Amino acid sequence: MPSQNRKRFSTSRSRTAKQMTSLSRHNDIASLLTLGPLRTGSHRMANGKPPHPRDAASDDEALLDALALLPAEAARDPKRDRIAGQRLNLTRLRYFVAVAEDLHFGRAAQRLGISQPPLSLHIKAREEQIGVELFTRVNRKVFLTAPGRILHQQAARLLDHVQRVDHIMQGVGAGEYGELFVGCVPSAMYDILPKIMRHYRSLYPKVHLVLKEGHTMDITEEVVEGRLDIGLVWRNVSDPSLGIQPIVRQQFSALVPADHRLAGKAELSLRELAEEPLILPPRRVSPYHYDHIISAFGKQGLSPRIEYEVPTILSQIGFVASSFGVAISPSVARRFATDGVCVIPIAEEMPPVILSIVWNKERDSRAGEQFREAVIGLFSSES
Image 1 (cartoon, rainbow, N blue to C red):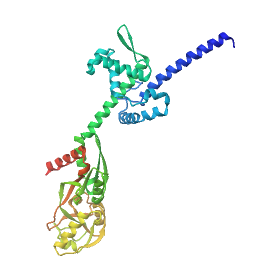
Image 2 (tube, rainbow, N blue to C red):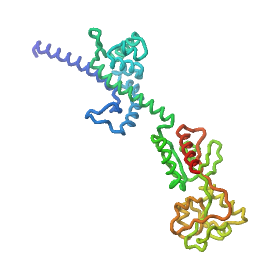
Image 3 (cartoon, rainbow, N blue to C red):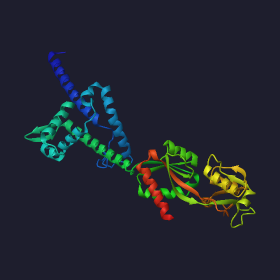
Image 4 (cartoon, helix red, strand yellow):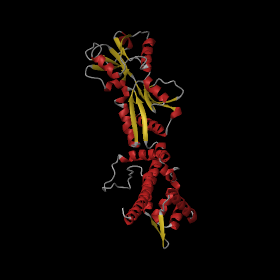
């Protein structure tokens, strides 16, 4: 190769290497601060359309993941040691964004509430940290450099997301956002719980209720262990760690097949029911109901004929409709009774069954407190 061509090639290669180094440095800055497709309400996508509403939650998640990974990324890539060897200093980023927006150190310092010399020192430290100039100063005017424009774009988005995360966390702490895990007994799932949900959602529409159906003992156990925030159970709680608030009182009623000889009566005595095969919930599932019913018979000197044990009111109704026996259940059963079942009041006075809210006093939250207040207010206004 002629020496002149070799020199030209060498010069070109050197120039290319410098360009690549500069480009790599700029890309390092962009890579450090680009946290995926970070979009907010104040930013639009490249096609000019607003971001999809579901992007906000995934953006916040991506932001938190990216902030957590920055130091690890720097440790894996020695080229980024100078840029990402320490966590992003949000204060310095705010200072930089203020100057980038005002293009005037004096006005930016005044807006930030600091004097100009410390602001200039912060910007200088940022430039030295990443190894490029962010601003040029020409005839006492300030302009953003190419890497400065990249940093401004990404830093503004980052700070916007940090502010949004702060707002969300404050909302979660105030009970305005987040999730509330609620367990409910089956007999309250079809009437009482939907009424509660409508009322609560009208007050706190941004709190998502995660629901679980279960029996009193299971729901209570999960509240104690912290897997549920709130339980709606038939009152049978003795754990000292739990708070309890009664909300609904109901009387027991008898369920008999529509073609049964007792079906036409206005009320039924416990003595009449004691002569029939009785369908009850198992004690291990509903000790509150079971003990109430057995105690009521015992006070009358009676011993019921327990024929079947089935766990829910709906299953009891099904068994009664099929003429397997009679049942004693809270009066809510009237709402679910089919044409083949008659719901009849019991003649003797029995203690009411009580549906209560339970919560773990040691794990209480503002959202849980607001839920209880909403429910208590709802049913107190109806009483």
